[in-house]
View 1: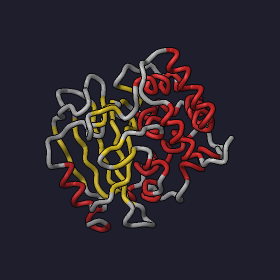
View 2: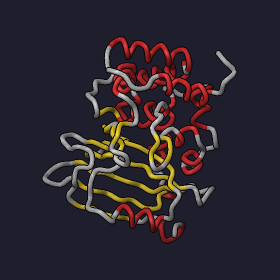
View 3: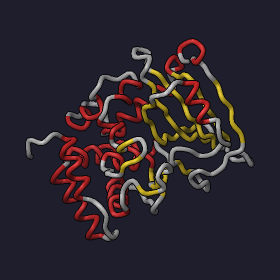
Length: 265
């Protein structure tokens, strides 16, 4: 292994698994690149598969709604889902596969920068009340908890969803027409770093919550709520749901502000 950092090797691998036709040979070549450059990532994915972590996540399109283009190419999409043991048909895949492992390997620029930044930077960790470097440390030195990085992220997100002190605002958007799906966007804030905020997005069906994504935001709670409620209810952040395509309109919206008055402005 070279003296390059994991992130540098991640970028090198990302450049090497670029565009190409989706085929068994292409997927095998991607596997060889990842095994050579970032074996920690493959080991993490394997542990997540064994721990059943992907079942905690819903469905997402690989086509980013901000640029209307895929964040990874089809051979990598297929290779990652194959490694995760998940059947997926382009462009709809498992949100955990795409929003974590796919984003780590994405070289596509969006209006908010590279998708991997949320995982290799510290802003999201801080907003979730975690020490800087926690995500990459989980890749480099797995602890005794089951699973890989996605399992670690899943536990952190589910914990913050249950922590009423961390939630500034909740936007629930209901599918309607006798459907059970509720798309829930939460704005959360670190109790120890008041300016560190993040959005966590999930789809709820009855008592079950399936995670979709999480990302840091540099905005006030009032501005975030104004942006979210400035358009009719819909699926957001590239989410898909059963028989609901990404950006599908939803029927109604309910907004609650459990800690906004006390802690956010």
